[in-house]
Image 1 (tube, helix red, strand yellow):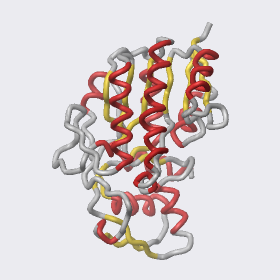
Image 2: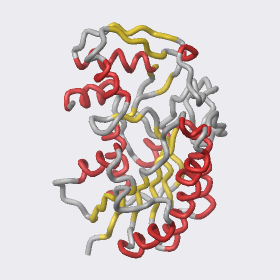
Image 3: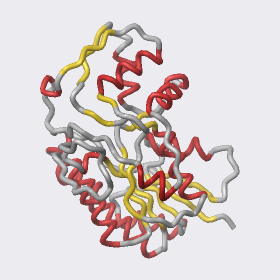
Length: 285
């Protein structure tokens, strides 16, 4: 009898990519993709009912409060979703001996590093969203041992809303754009991350802990935008600007390049170069 896997946030960007990655392929598990309608993530009773119903072997948590600027004022809501609900989720995972795969963010760091970020580096979030995600990580680590916390950055795909789709939409009505050049990181194709998660599950890997995953290479948002229009064959002028040109409620880390040595060596995961993955995504769009 096949074991069950539940995906919380199943209709979000990463959830949809996971769904596509397993659909139509022979699987050793039953995947259940739970939307907000299927599961009220902040309702403790509802979460407990879901675990009792499915007795999942794995729980993949893609759900989060991700509105970075709104989080600066919506404190109760952001911590309820990103910290307290995550704690209750971990408690249910412990009760049912479920392995938790939890998606976190580069925003747990302050962005002041000058070398790629390792998992053992001291975090220091510079905004409320990053702090709430760090608190969620800490709750998981305090409650249970069978977990993967996967920090990722600059997530995009052909699904849902993201930077790539925003740029392509803006280019339909404009012939020039200004994009920030002094925030450095690596774009991450959500389909690549989905495949990495499935790799962990299908190979029944037990090297639990915190891992970093983004695509290979380094880019600024300006570089990212230029590559989008290059691969989409759109004639758009893109001008680099300092981040100070955009006034936002939440401060962003300036440097978010992550070191992926641990996930490549310990989990045996191959990671594509960001431009190659972006080109694949653009062709699908």
